[in-house]
Structures are given as structure tokens and as C-alpha cells.
Image (cartoon, rainbow over all chains, first blue to last red; front, top):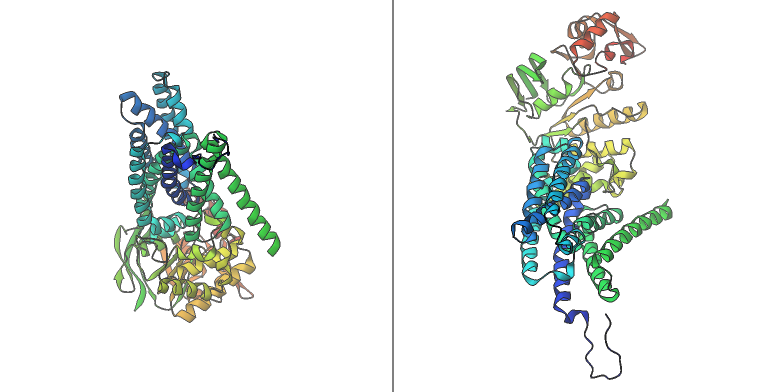
Length: 282
Length: 278
């Protein structure tokens, strides 16, 4: 993708920011990464990463269903993931129940997705986009939707974050203090659902973990503070997303690959750096 | 004023009556050991005091007011203590999550809350634990943090549900001594439930013994006796005192099996009546 030769100073060298699709990609990735980093911190803290994974799969069904009936895949994604998130939150408030509840929703949704795919075989490209994402294809109107949903989700997370943290760390005590575990479980999974739908736009259904779990897990390796953890997680997600898109521009490899690779690498580095620090002080 | 007043309280759990028509007064500023076999209602009683379980009959008053959920005068350590032990969260942040944890907003403690958290950690001698991650703490160290957490908000009454479980005898003694020191220093009331009486003997002012839907409150020498425990457990109980330790013995194996039958869903229902009780 590097164009031209450097022979004359007056030949204009286009940078990646000269392309609309690149500017759109950076903007969309920024919105989604910050949201995913912050929400992911709580998701990892609550050991609910499987829920995020499952919501991604459910979202696939929503998106393919939306295309079948002729509406935008993003709205199908949002509607179905939110419905599934609320359903999962209502079905199980205890950790032991949660895995079963999530598994049941997941199995049913995948079966439906299979059915929709059955009617949908001509749109192989769209299916791939949903599965693996294509941030370079995001248009301006989608960015505005991502921004609106992202700001709303972050505002809601900020509002409930204190009782959510309490309920996550000490459920029995929180309940005794009057915190409804079920209410915050449902509200949080609603936020996770919207975040998942947003992540699908960037990295696709199958790589939601790259943005929502990787940066958060790495952040929890490097800091024991909640506030710092959320900030580091969001910052890491943003760096990984932007660097991933940049690398995709120069290598022509898929951006989702780069983002997922950077996410895994950041986590490994975080674990290693923590161990090194541990040895030094041991 | 009494810290806790129960009047003709009936508590049921899953259709089974755990406390039947109990009336008692727990004076303020006392350390009460709550004893009784599994299923005798130790946890249910604490949950009633917290306002989480409404009594089927009777009234529960805490420091002169009807029991209500989210009562700020009570500090509580539940028996089940979450699944946070593998997290790399710092001890300080863990304790901080309980400060105003029920209120909406960002989990960033105010200056006053920070001082309260520091004070609670200092009181239990856990200031150094505040900087370490939970995942690298021993059970006893996490126990200390949980105790610190009960002190957030300067409560007048501590409900500690089985704090000695899964601690070795040495650590058990440390926890009891720490709680006793806190109780005296802060002038608060402590309800401390346990399976065994002996670790608590030097700390408690009174013992609350639960069993068979009944309750007996009083000094150890008045309550931990053959006749009182026999009435509570519904079987022949003998109490032996040997070198400052107390042994509670069940006379008949058949009686122990009987206790099992009354104790739905608890595999170890009757074992405490046995000689290994203490």
C-alpha cells in the first residue's frame, strides 16, 4: 500500500489519514475500544467473560436475521444481544447457575443462526464480515450510532459502577447492604450486550475477546487499583485497535488479525512483567 | 439499651422451623458466642437481624429500631465470602468496595471514606495488606481484610458468621483475640458464631446456644450444661470440664442419628453433639 517513489519534493505522498475509510476506521475503533476496555474490566473482574463470548455468537444470529428481514445488521445485533443479555441476567444471578444459563442461551442462538445461514448462503462476504469484522468498511453514519450507543453505555456503567463493584466482589455482603444482585447483574449484561454489538463492527463476532477481555486481563496484571485498572484497560484497548489498523494499512493483512495479535501479546507481556517484578522483590 | 431484642420470634427456612417463639435481649457492648449444630439457625438468625429474612412471627429490634435491610449500624461478615480470592486486586481496593457500596456512582471513595478505610485496616493491623493483591494472600490475611470491611462505616454491632472456619487453631486464636480487642476498644457488640466453644472461652461474655428450634442465652457455666443442652438438642448430653476446656458429649448414638433425621440436607448434622465437638 505504500505508494509512489521519493524523487521530487512536490509529489504529494498520501498518508493513511488522507483516506476517508482510514479516518472512519480510527474514529470507530477509538469509540469501541474505550467502551470495550472499560466494560471488559468489570467483565473480567466478575469472571463473566464467557457471557461476552456467548453474546457475540448470539449477535451473529441477530445480524444475519436482520439482513434476512432487510434491516441494518447493527440494529439486529444490538437488539438481539441486549435481549439475550437481559435474559442471561434474569436467569442466573449466582455464579454456579450462570454458566448453565449462558450455555443454554448460546446453544439456542447458534441453532437459530444456523437456520438463518441456511437461507443466506449467497451473502458469504457479509457473513465473513460479521464473523471477523471489517473496520475499514465502517461508514460515517455507523460511527454516529457507535458514538451514541457508546456514550450511553459508558454513562450507565459509570452510574452503576460502585454497587456493581461491591456486588461483584462481595455478593453476600452487598445483598445484606441492600444491593440487588439481580438488578445489577441484568443492567451490567445489558451494557455488555451493547458493547459486544459495537465490538463486532471492529473485530467481528469471533474476536470480541480481543477487545473486551484481552486489555482488561492485561490491566489487572499490572495494577491492583480499580480506577487505574479501568483506565489502563481502556488505554490498552485503544492502542491495540489503532496500532492494529495502522499495521493493517501497511501490511494489507486483516486489521482484526493485528488487533487480536496485539491483544494477546499485551497480555503475555503484562504477565511476564508482573512475574519479573515479583522475582525482583521476592 | 439492648443491642438486639427478639420478641416471640419464629423463623423458618425452606418450610422448616429453625427458631420457634424465641425471646431474648442481648445487651450492648457484649461479646456473644453463637453456638449450635449446622442447621440450628445461626446464619438464619443473623440474616433476620440484618433484615434479610422477615420473621414469620414476632419482632426483631436492633439498637431500638426494627430490623431493616441495609442497616448501617451493623457490620457483617457472611459465611460465604465471594470468589474474589484469585483476583489481583489490592487489599485496599477490596475493602474500599464496601464503602458506600450500595450507592450509585463511580467507585472512587471520598476523602472521608478513604480515611475510614485506612482506619478500618489499621484497626485490624492490615495496613500493609492494603498494598498487596488478594491472589497472594493467605486465608488468614484475607480474613483480616474481611474483618476490616465489617468496620467500614463505624458500626455498633458486628455479626461474624463462622469466622474460624478453615483456619488452623493458632490462627483461630489470633482472630478471636483480635475481635475481642476491637470489641473492647470500640465498645461495640459482637455476635460471633462458631462450631466450637473452646477457642472463644476467654473472649465471650455470654453464649447463645441454638438447637431444636430453641435458644438459650447466658453465661457459659449456666448455658453449657447437660440439662440445658439436652433440652436444646433433644437428646442426652453430658458436659465435661477438663483443665479449663469444655467437652460436650452425646450419650447415645441413636440420638445422634435422630438429629440427622431432623437436619434435612446437612450431611454432618449431628456430629457436633459428638465427643469431637470441642
